[in-house]
Image (tube, rainbow, N blue to C red; front, side, top):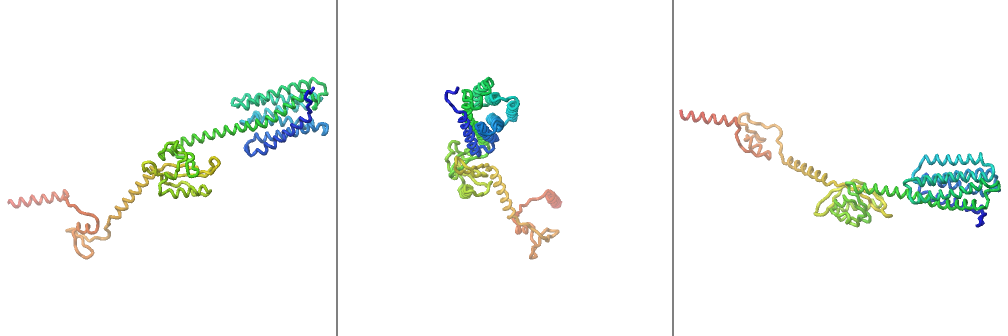
Length: 418
């Protein structure tokens, strides 16, 4: 007996409209989960259940084969796909795909081969739904990484098994007059619970996917944070010409505490000779133009210290507004080596420019070693070279000449004594 006088056709109509609305809303929302295979499965399941309840509600209007046969096939297939989408909301699983497929196929095979009377068909379909929901509830509760939302859904599915068991029991015990539109409390309780499950499943599916997206976002933020904080390069985000974010290497580069970076005017630290060009490139990038990357400029920081950096930047959105993300590599040591090398080259070139090179044929006396100039005069070799180059002479005596001079000196003394 149905004390609330619910009409089964009215409940079926609510299930049709509920599945239609759920399918349409999820389809419209699909762009949020463009890469989600589970969403496609869930939308298809809703479409199948809508078709199933429509055919069941038209019992007596359309053929029995279409209503009972196609309707129950669509119903069991739709429920299996819906529970598969919810069970695998965290991650896809081939094992659960096979499990739900086997349950649906075995259940429908039993329905078409063993159920002949109206009450046995209702009892068989109730047992098939029982197997599907019991499997889904157990699987979701057994997930060690399950959230409170998932555990609540798992418990709800197991609770839904109660009216399914009672309906199956009463259907098998009742005579053939137990029909689809029986207004008894068992039928009403099962269909009312189905409406509640329909409503909850749509919300649960979105919440489960929201959990997955939040977890992925949190993991992505952790990876990005670790990358930024452990990088040796200076990483910053510029918005409205000021620092919206900067990592520890940037704080060391500017000689500022990390907590003082936010809101700081970065361009005030750029060397005055480089500031205009860097600002021009920054504005071009904000306007969507490409000023190029990998250019060098100088920072003038605390104590008048000059630091050279190479900058790579890209346009991005930061908290809903345009910004520039920059990566800077400190190249001060390299620049100092380059300057030292350039200075050494310049000094060498200056030295070379001051050297006068004597060239051509020099007539020299084979006896006195005087050199004849271009006017025909004979000059001492020292005087000639001094006048034609930057070289200057200092005089000394080599060991061989020293021995010769001393020998002559001693011989002259000996001759004088004799």
